[in-house]
Image (cartoon, rainbow, N blue to C red):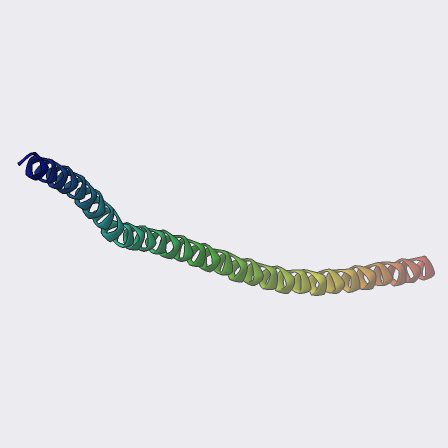
Length: 114
């Protein structure tokens, strides 16, 4: 009879140990099942962050491109204005030289008349 009690006690001890191991394994399985979900969530978060940063960079590049186009247009306008002013200056210089020459000629004519 005592041998039977000893066997029952060992079986109960084994049962308790196995129940503990089962709970431990069940916990590990739950942790391992949530790991891919966590990783997937983290991956989605990182993708969202990357997409947002990419969009921001593309917007920044577009703004810079627009600014560059405007600056190039202003340069072209400035170059045309510069050319127009150069032509006006050349014309004014020619007119001034002509006026000086006429004045000299007119002065010589007055001197001859006197």
